[in-house]
Image (cartoon, rainbow, N blue to C red; front, side):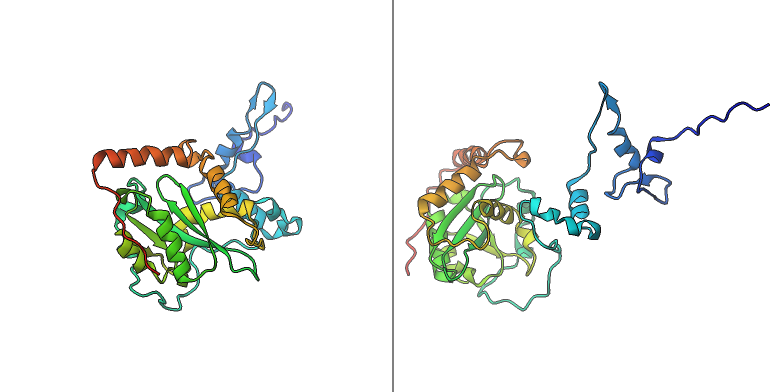
Length: 284
């Protein structure tokens, strides 16, 4: 007589639901990691079960998936957009900036962030009827933010703010900057000639090519959300926000602050060169 049937021995990935089998026979979870890896994260330690570990991309996809829309979980995200922005945007309407140099002509070594002194530029817009905006400049390697209030989004006002930011930075530490294709950068040649800098422009509707600046603008929005008027904002208020952002440790910087990395890299640059600050007055 046959004895009692023993329960079928299960493998870790058999205990995970919502898995799919790839051509190689490996099971993967919806977020793209092998199910066995996720199961390993569930092992017991001191009688307690470890929490599940998923990538941030998995969480974003789950939050924006159709079944979860009724829960409106995007309200808990830092930006909480109604829809996720596509990496490759819309078609270009054509250049509107004189002497525009595309980002494709920017030296490839800039992409690695190993070299100090390359910036990204943008404008943070306040709500109507106020026309006041914030001009932002971010150094790519240190992630240090610079910002100035401007009366409007016009090209002359933007050029003046850029000059005020860069004129006090030593020339070896301000090599170039990368703008989007907004008309506020139309006077970039005035700043280039006055400070000896170069200006590149990202591809149309490709904000990911200036991801550092977009990230810092997002941090500003935590203090000044969209639909906030900048009329009552003073230069001191804005600088306090910038200082707090620059003094916040970042994982990408090995938990150093942008200020710490900025001053260390600035010291390295100045120790290697005797170039003085080179700039001329920017006329109206």
